[in-house]
Length: 433
Image 1: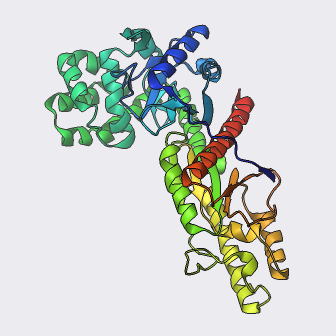
Image 2: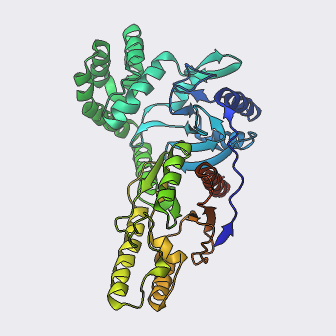
Image 3: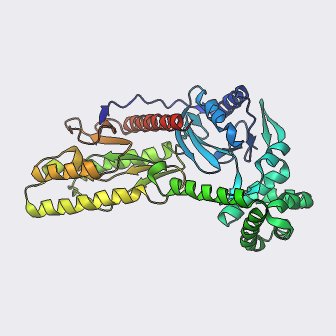
């Protein structure tokens, strides 16, 4: 394990408009003209959505990544790739007070379960220029934007996203034949007309009733007209989705430990909003068992203060540590959405931090060999406390002084987390590209 002093806090961020200007200039240098799929109405000053969605050709992804990497003051802190899209998270951009990161999606296929419902080349070919301030970029044609905004929730999720529906309904009403024509290659005439009529009429239930016929028609049309390509696309989709959702590939774990429960609570509660948009999901995980009891002051009894020579106490500790290790491994494979940044508050790491006694030495050897690796261990200690390093050598550990101001601790913890995420993401991108 590498024990480090927390890097100095750097809360300086660019405004959203500054970031967009630099980003589009970088795109031009890479000879890229990605299509902004939606939520561009507030450009360049504000972002209407939670992230920015670009449509590109798959072969253009390396250049899009390179364009991001050359931006000054920006760090890529998260990357997850699915069969049809790459999710990136960049730190150093403020889209709202207190938020320092932004999500970017570079998609190259508009599909459901690998079955394409709108051809990427058709969308890019029909894209229209748009100007917002000094920015010049491409957006989909009105009909294509309406179809994408509607089906991204209706077809894929089986629900209607009301945020986009007024605009979708307006476009379908004014260009019903064009909308039906855009849907027909993927769904056939009957299903396309049923959906278009339901949208124009504003009948939510009829639109929801169209979901199953749309999916059935999409699969049938794909297998009839492009059987081999459709089969391979579906297979690749499910293989990639399994890797994203059911393996540790897209899980970043930060352990926050220390005997002061209140200090841990303060740090984590403050970090959660600060780290928004550094991953698709930023979550807090509570361990089911408290390995060490809390005293009257709200502090956990340190592992070194336990009577480890007592056999019953040792047996309980062994049972708890086994359950802890099992739950840690199970959590590695729990279903997740895209990229997850998880805060783990397991008090078992305090046991590893302060071993004492023969029974604890046995537990340490077992835990060290069986525990899944974590990216960063942040330990909160008082000025007089010290803990030896006992975990895996590749893990980074940061010690924070709980006697200092809470805001200072949070900034140092934030800087350590972002630095770790950026370093790991850089390694992923080097391996991928």
